[in-house]
Image 1 (cartoon, rainbow, N blue to C red):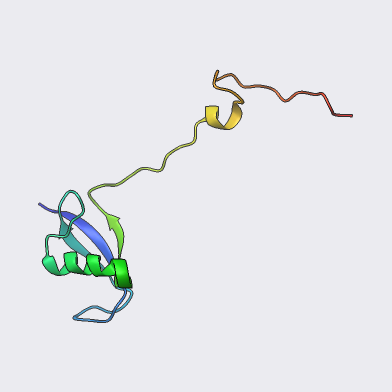
Image 2: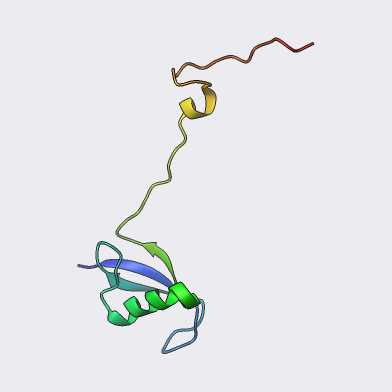
Amino acid sequence: MPDKLQLKINFDALNYKSGDIIKIDCTEDGIPLDKFWRDRLQDAKRDNCVEVVSNESKKQEPKEQTEKSEKTNDDSGKIKKPSKKGKG
């Protein structure tokens, strides 16, 4: 079974209205199987006629920030306490 690609339509044509979101069959790489939609995605580079909303085959989880990157001051991984010098 092919993967699905969600497209937002930005034009009124055929049976679609501007703002419609549709699902079309695509390869694992996100390339539409139908030549019409492949051509529309090429056109979208110039005229923004369609937008890719999501590719259901490649769901990416948001990256989590590690505590190390937020709280360390060097590459040792140790948390440094702020110095008390300069406070008065």
